Amino acid sequence: MLRFYFAVARTAYRRQLTYRWANLAGLLTNIFFGAIFSYVMIALFHARPVAAGYNVRDVLRYIWLVQAMVMIVLTFGWYDLMLTIRSGEVVSDLSKPCDFYWYWFSREMGRSAYYLLFRGCPRTWQVCCSSVSGPRASGRPGSPMQPACRWPLCLASPIVFSSTSSPSGFLRPAQWPL
Image (cartoon, rainbow, N blue to C red):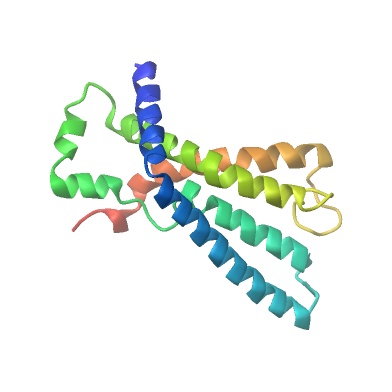
């Protein structure tokens, strides 16, 4: 049965590969809004070079990490299940000899894997390599995170984010049709 879920995830990954121009347009949109947010923050940090322990470099790192994670985590909503309920295609999903939730979870993991490789990794790599010090826990002295833990946590966080954002799509009642 596990092979079935891997096949579903692989199919969802391939589905995203077919829309290369749309994904390129989405990547350019992320870059555009990241640049706008960056210039706004740079302008704000001209008045005060440090705010709450963060300098402009830390804030720019945060902005670009958020832009890298937007499509992996689906912060703007998840409507695939809602659309299948509205169209009636959910009947075919329920009639499959597999768990309904694991089926949708594997679909979302395939989609997230695509966005992780083609949007998240390049942007995260750029942000992590933009400083010699690497990611910091809080930017304050006496941070509890040890240097050996910083990089593995920075690299593992997109996987954790994507695996927790998919099940939360079932729990958000605002996405269910009325």
